[in-house]
Length: 213
Image (cartoon, rainbow, N blue to C red; front, side, top):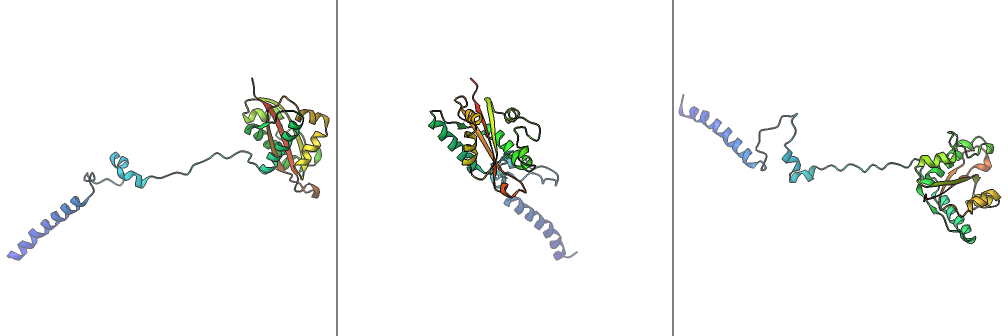
């Protein structure tokens, strides 16, 4: 074996050692441990270290949707405003909206608008198509106060009309102008019907309550 051949045999292992040394020296601090297997988890200090922020994943905020979202919020708020104006005119305190009473009112407004009035005006009822009565719906909403009553109007094209209609009815007037209720929920939903004059009209459901002593 000549000297050149011997030099090549010795130089190749030395080059490999030098390359390995250079790669090790250029690695970030703390990564000189043995290589990870493909199925192995990274060391805990790598997850909690300064580089963790670069790989952090922000999951989207999941918000539980309302079971009965407002279909016409403006209608609901305007009805409460008009009702409170009438109450103040008669020396009564205005009612404040309670979200759980609103939930119970919307639940029935949905039912009236979608299920009941599609069958005809004779099906407009306080009893839901699921068999619930107003106090059931208030209780199931989780309202902590005392249920005072419910009134409904089954189809109007203008928010002032159902209030005026109810105030012209002595029993409904006594209910809406009672000094006992403190809280209110109003729900509205379009009437789903093939009858021409009902298209564009809304059901209106009003539920009153009072905090428990």
